[in-house]
Amino acid sequence: MNVKVFSEKRSMGEAAADQAATAIRNAIRDRGLARIVAATAASQVEFLECLSSVEGIDWRLVEAFHLDEYIGLPITHPGSFRKLFLEQLVNKTGIVHYHLLDGEVDPAAAVRRVSEAITSAPIDIIFLGIGENAHLAFNDPPADFECEEPYLVVNLDEACQRQQVGEAWFADISQVPKQAISMSVRQILKARELIAVVPDSRKAQAVKACVEEEITPMAPASILRTHPNATVYLDTNSAALLRTNSHSAI
Figure 1 (cartoon, rainbow, N blue to C red):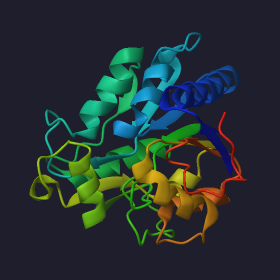
Figure 2: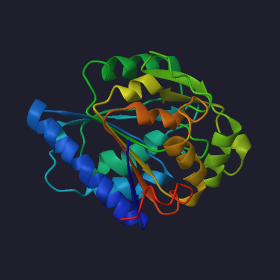
Figure 3: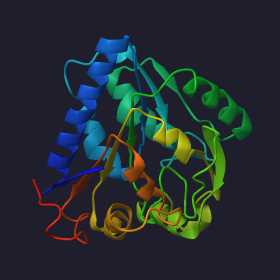
């Protein structure tokens, strides 16, 4: 796993977007279509803003999926990942071929539909975050590293729910849904390339666990270290607990 540390979030987002854009262009050049998966959350704002403004990508040749979505939350809610997926990526780029995880009415049907679509061909690149509890997508600890299903319904632990309140998507923890649809860990690892964008000091402990400690379901994002083409982008705040001689800021 390649770890890159930047002095601030904007330069981090620009560098991650440059790598992502290269992967998308290469997929279009080699296969005529790029298949991507994008996380949408507070931590991804700078990265997706930079990526959506990159020149030289024919977004009509991009098929996009998103990682996860709450169950029972309407798309009009500020915290809806469908809403953020559309606002942060689709509407800005003009992507016409995309798949929404609709967990509001019939989550099981949404899981079946998007699972069928995502397994129809390999995924070129996935854009990820890492949660404060080290979750990967909505796979909270202890994560299921063995599930073969592309998407699954998961229970959200209290740490995950409190993170959503802390990011101001919900007024208090009672408003945070208790379940979500999430891409499985095994499905994430099937992508040709992974980019995780992880800024802010509140992620520092999770980053340390995932980068330097044991690979374990108790730190789900630690599994990224097993992927042959994974890059983690950090700022100095999220990298603050890493061994100082290991990763210098760019």
